[in-house]
Image (tube, rainbow, N blue to C red; front, side, top):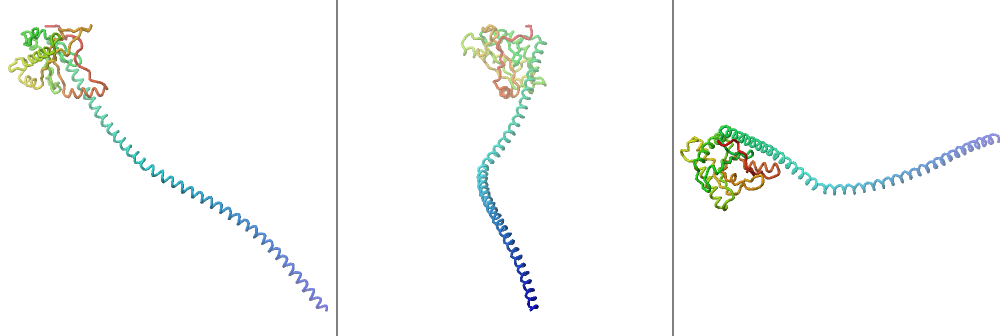
Length: 309
């Protein structure tokens, strides 16, 4: 009995221990279940957060797609504008190149103008000096270089045939004139010599036109005739190549300071010279200055360069 009691007691102890172990295991299982429940909640929260994040990403992806579509549309719109801009830039480059070329041409033309103006100024100075040294009475326009010889000395009233005094005046004047213009320094610049006849306003325009033409012709034919002794054959040949004779009638009258016509000064024969390419250069000068070329004709009675001989 004692042995059975002892065995029963031992078995009871083992059962108690087993029960304790079972209780402990049950506690651990409960704790594990609670921990699993917490983990499950955290996982669900994480999944919900991930779902929300995915939704936000999807929304951003959709917005990005819309933005990309808009960018593509804007790019499609910008391409022709870019092409137009490039075309305009090319056009501007071409215009700038053209402007640079035109500027270079203008500078060259300006230099040409300055050179010709300088040549004309020097010719006028040399003509004035030569006429003074020869004691020849003549009027020289300081701007154009035109030299006026009074018709009252060259012709009788209403006549177109040179008087003896007129021939003497031409004989004294012309050699000095052509010596300057046909000098080695200026010969290449002088393209034309113009002999112009002018009258006063007395009489009709047509009759004065005829008279002025006849007087210009008389002077030209006298100095260009074969055997004219006061210039060389070579000079006469060159003078024939560049000389023209015109009649201006009463179209370029001379006026005194009070505005009345100076009939004596208006009756005149004018020697003019034109430089090479002078007409073109005058037009260029007009463009450069933004206005019309000034007339070289005198507007009042010019001053004589020397006292009459």
